[in-house]
Length: 339
Ligand code: KG4
Image (cartoon, rainbow, N blue to C red):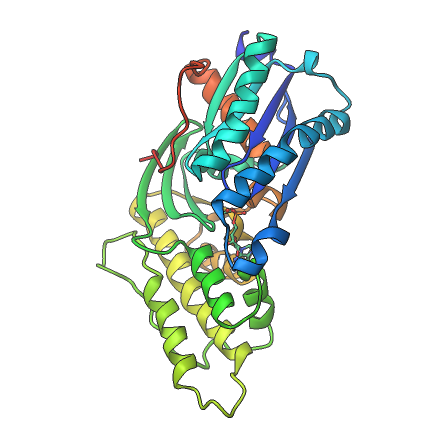
């Protein structure tokens, strides 16, 4: 099937705790996106339990696939390409979506492509009306990753920096857990931060070496823990100030390193992606730095910045156009392969 004559792409995402299926039209328009987030089963553990996640994917995958076709008002006969997340992610979770999609493709003789989850986040902004031009710097921040990429085409990504310990979303989730704010923690910390003063507590910023685009968030997380332990037990914790100051420390490092990456690589466009990029304070800070440095900023809307299947359909479609189908014998992978 020549890439230009593809009518619809089916995308399947199951790398972590979201089961998602989307239908993308051959002109890049999203016709359907159905998602089931498993927050209800993981909330009491304060994080994703891999075994529970894969079991829930197994229950969900067929109904969600059927719902996506219904929402798009098409049948499987109208699908010319099936894309599924191949990695990185939780092995048990990946296997459910990948094997479902691969089996469907094999049984119906539809071309199949394994898409990289990170490339989905890097390209998710192309699901929006306003599309960036290459090259651009992408800051991808989620529960599983915090990386900066130099993106020169829809298949060429160079990783300039990564987290050396916790991912940004993981740090938000762990701080929320120690403050008993619930799961997922990022949106709850962000909400609480709205009432607080970001300059109230000076939490550490890990800049690492001057020229490094790597991140380290375990120190700020530990600093929050130590601050709480040192707080007098008979007084309520200043939750809003803790959240605002923690968020400020996270955002300052994320935004500054991203703007510097654009400067160092002579790139005029910055793109955000991943669940944490829904954070409004991060978007505001990034916008401020982009204005100061004459950079253009593109952010996908929240349903496309968090894990979703439309970005997998898009990234798979672009990969197929460049490299053709993925052999059915290829396996999933758990660790990031980009850069
Ligand atoms: O990309 P994503 O949907 O999926 C995974 O990484 O699995 O990102 C989820 C992460 C979680 O850690 C969540 O707490 C964080 O994104 N997150 C946020 C916000 N919304 C979601 N972190 C900070 N502020 C937010 N508003």
